[in-house]
Length: 357
Image 1 (cartoon, one colour):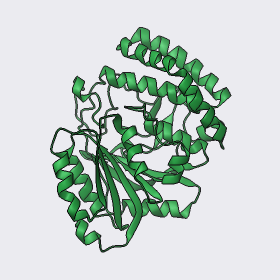
Image 2 (cartoon, one colour; image 1 turned 90 degrees about the vertical axis):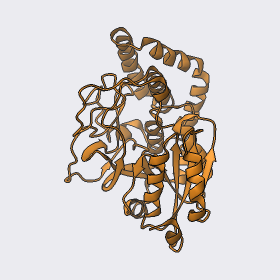
Image 3 (cartoon, helix red, strand yellow; image 1 turned 180 degrees about the vertical axis):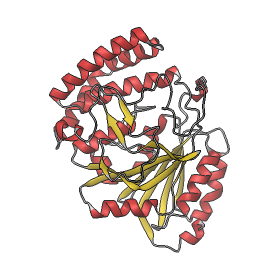
């Protein structure tokens, strides 16, 4: 179905927000899949973090066919969290679909996700399986987990799809493909724009739960992730952002008793990690960043805790509450994927520090 053919359908109550950077081919395919959604005609906001490829020309060339439903916003690069807030600010529909530009959605995805939300007014956000394009039985994520010292990981990452799995409550959902109530995301404070890379979906999911908006995954929602089988080694800039974001999220969101437990674990782990593994400078930068922004973070904490409706104990039982993820990253950007045949991950170049901006 083309966008012109879709325009004769009733409008879907959904705006898709897609952050992108230098992914013209992926984005073009992603938009084609959105045009074929059977839920109706979607609004789409593409937020481009100053791509240098053919992204601007490609999107603007598609705009006439979308009949005013495709909006292109170009801005200075500041990561996917900030880009999602830009798209959220432009959203006028009751539901917002946060979607990465390298994700393909089958035609029924939006309709099924809307049905789950319609059936349950207490459900704030819905997601499902993120599967690898190079192996559609390989799981990238089935929601997200949060550990005792703030480490976060994708549930079932690197495993084989289990058709028998049912719906499940989660602490957070991978924002590669997440349909949410727009007002719930706004009430939770939207995305933290200082999270240039990593942990922004963990942070928003945790806060949605704190505000009483449940987060769930459903096995009938299956999205395809077009990513290389080679996970790549984490560039030091990725390590910096991941470490700083994890600590800031913990300081904002964790309840008093839980914060003490998480900080104790974080301090012990960080000290051991600094001794055992590089890049040490990136990890020290992350700690210094948080110390320098501590006043701002504590002000955000007072706001979050003042509006909290659900205790941590209730939320954290939807995770495993492990100290460490089942499979360690071991310096990689992602865990090895099921079905991937990669002898050793490649080293990310500086320009590849964040391939999602």
